[in-house]
Image 1: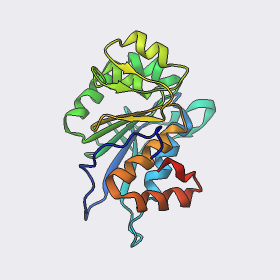
Image 2 (image 1 turned 180 degrees about the horizontal axis):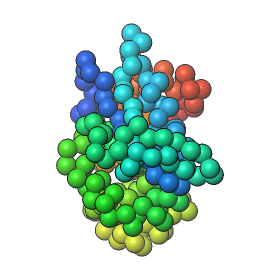
Image 3 (image 1 turned 45 degrees about the horizontal axis):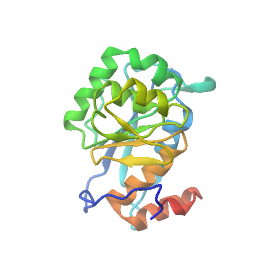
Length: 213
């Protein structure tokens, strides 16, 4: 395995009859690839029998049109009141995460509550700031976009912020570096949860580099 992709002992790989549920947070000024990349990865992942393995949905604090970075408009499927229980909660980044939503007390409290019953919480890019503000990275190792690593370490000194890694797995909390690294992290999660052959087939379908596996 590439050193950029640390592997942990797999406690989660198992045969399941139900799809794992993935919820992706949206907010104004979210980085597009931060959420669209993971959405694509999970939504196309299939078993060898061509059965979908993940049910992917989007949500926001309110169910209203989201204006992502550079003008892309997206309508979330759920709001905080009606989102179903998730197996994986994904928190993307972007200007909206590090400069706007980090001051959104209701959102931060909601993330903190989800951590109690969500098996895996993952962040992409500066989504790590929202996890940090919620206290979920205290005493843990984390990564974020290389341009923001110094700020994350300065603002949250109890986090061990590292560089030059695409993602870091703390079992229940996984952080990934900038933008496209979210795709790498999600392929790693698929390998961890569903097996290497499923992850490799997903990467091949996307024509994504297989060395991430």
